[in-house]
Length: 599
Image (tube, rainbow, N blue to C red):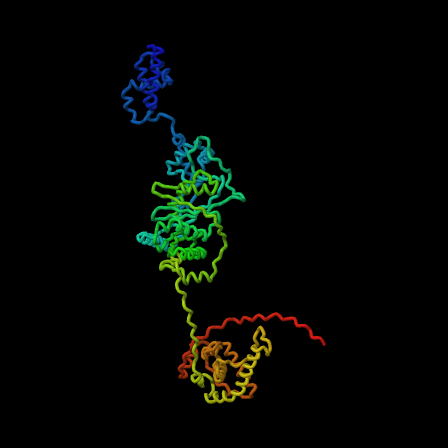
């Protein structure tokens, strides 16, 4: 039947509404049903009203006239089984295998690990597949890769470096210390330095809502100029009350700057929030301006403790674990969110952004500006560190290098160290034994009596020389003492001098071992033996013939003790005297110019 223009417009409006809610199959059957209802000429009329092909309408009319064909089609399908364009892997059976081989060649990572990846893009893979004779678009490549378990992923920062053996134990120690301080109502803060920022029209990550086509314009590069100002935010997060405090400095990130930020927090917030508190707990990482080995950090904390009267307890996180510090994920991340997609043109902009940082959990931030100068390269002397370790720092029982307290008042100074006890000596009566000296004790006593006069003359001459030098009438003291003329030792008697000679000649003892027996230094033994030989040569007194020496050399105290015990001598050898320091020549005065006498 013929369809008028009015009816054609009504049919077109109805079909336009139905097209929006029908899929391909339902739309085709709907057109066919309308054509069958119109009768002769209905296919052409419906095709004109719907803007569809007459073949589509005819196919829909055939399906609408066959209820069994409608019911035979599986639910959810728009086409009959086998209809539609075949997939690429069905047309080319070797396509999937070639793709897997190509991905295997470009695979990266440890072959023994499940973590592997490919550096090829989808277009690169499609291009190489076409070169191998398997033409496939990038969408087909992506679909096949997803079916084989591949996906487009970024890197995940979860791998950690070298871990300390007591890392977990230190975490538990920090947690227990924080809980104890919070239970007592004492302040607990987490501190660290935030990433340094450049002031100016520099790009920052993030997006912000702005009118379309009006982005914030910044420099196309991040190179800093000579006059670019860089700020250093040092954050202090009060764990108990969820409050942040940030000191924005324009100088260097030093330990003095970090401790000054803590002092500003205590001055402006801490002392009012914790009135009457006598101690403070600081948790920080092990590097940077608050490094565990930084001398200036501990020196400045000692100054702060003395000024505030607080006992400052410090707990460092183990190396490589700074991301567990609460200031990182409870304060700094929110400041970064506030600063995103906007350049920091001045210090006031940075401070205003920190002040505007709030969260739904109640975080609020209080920024301050620190324009002080904190030069680098300041060194703390060894004497200062010794003082701090002895009187101010109190290391903890568990890893004292990580956990220590800084006392507000120094401990009392330790008393003077006791003087080292002078080494003992073996009595002369014990040493004057034939087995040790090789001669009769009476002969050694007689020899000492014969040398009494020349020995006393040598001592008197030596004393006269010393007194003359002190009065300034004697010869000038030389830089290097005259060791060619041995003097009588005031630490040894004449008998001791003779014992030293006989012990050396008969037993061949070392000077160290002989000095231990007589309680003097080895150099004194050398002087004594040289003096006695000169006195004997000058007096013409011969020594008795030497007795046979021991069969084995006596080089150690154990050898000498065993020899004496075999001879029936009870000999207790004292420890050797400590060696004297090297001799330092005294600086001689410059010679003065004296005017020549006139004849």
